[in-house]
Image (cartoon, rainbow, N blue to C red):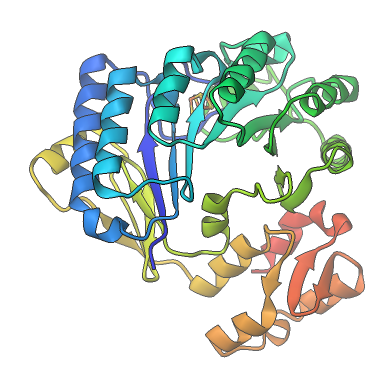
Length: 368
Ligand code: SF4
């Protein structure tokens, strides 16, 4: 049954040096046409959206849309989904977009979870990354959300930044621990190809941190967040009790979800598909009522393992054996070695990473 809906907003006010997401800086005209197309798609799928339990508006930066356009999307959603407090309704934002007007709008339409792109509190790192907010914007944003009754708040953070010291990370963690939030996503900075950051790297203008420093920093993140009461429930995600992201868990346990908007992916009844990433093409296909999905194959078992093992609870081996008619540990004998050496552990029927294993994640994922 389809329970998760994702809407992609491919616009940003600025482009960060490390970002390889599907997004662009666009004119108001283009944004308006895009939102019209997106709303048309929402209506097209209305019969499939009856049992939706999570809605996630991501990007790009959804909060970079003008208020009137955001409102159009909310109205369309409300016309096809009975949105009540039981639905986890999330939106991604930048701290400096969280104005009084924005918060009033999202609370009026039932958004009950806000994800804020903070990344770091250090001005010099923020400037290098291409972020336009300051630390004070983060505090103002969280305060505004609380005052309007939105208390389920995630922040996206990054460690292993270019030239970041352990002391700087410690300071970031200290500041994180003072925030009244329910969820934290903490990723290491990745040098993705075709980004400005990668270009700088190729020109020898910046260097990557070594694996040892990255491991030290990851351990600092884990130790601090666990100590201040967050549960480490996915490789890079931490939540206060009961505030895990239901929407993202849908992805990690490869359950069905519908993605709408340019470049968005869907998984429905085991079939994967995606929309064209080109925004103009996406808009024109919707306007012409053309079929705009491309289907592609994945190996379901491999995907189940790669995604499910990201969860600290792990994967249910008995269930996987039954679904795929296999013996997982026989199929991948290396798993025995990882268990014997303390990188993986069997907890009842669940195979999961140990803390030591997390640092070897890529090697372990590599066997699939
Ligand atoms: S704001 Fe987010 S989506 Fe936009 S460029 Fe920066 S990281 Fe990418």
